[in-house]
Length: 166
Image (cartoon, rainbow, N blue to C red; front, side, top):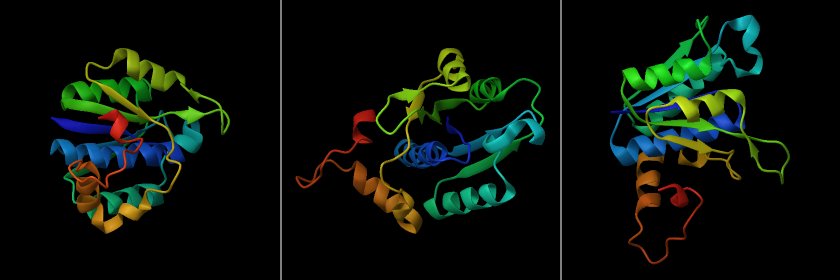
């Protein structure tokens, strides 16, 4: 089984990436990060640049998870179909995607891609919103930091928003 992350270069995409890393470590499964688009012209801000992909690859390498990064351009269908089909073919134990917020205080919104992934995926889908604090602090110590965050045996452990998803 594999953890699959639908990534776009945004705060929500970063939250999905870091949540995917944590899930990969927790489940002891490899991680596949995908950025899919119909093509460069139609992609706009959702298409990861070469710099974005290089940075994601460095973060993943530093995290210690077995990983693969895929940039899918010119997909015949759309990003939702690509994620759902890839999840079935891997197979994926979970798909991780980010949801946007309309305003700082408003509820998360569900775009057409997120809605289709939720409705069509044959595996669980974990949705996340942007983190209120940067997750870069995990950096090179990601495996130890994520494992420590998941250790609930300590009486000093304060539950976090991530704990509510477990």
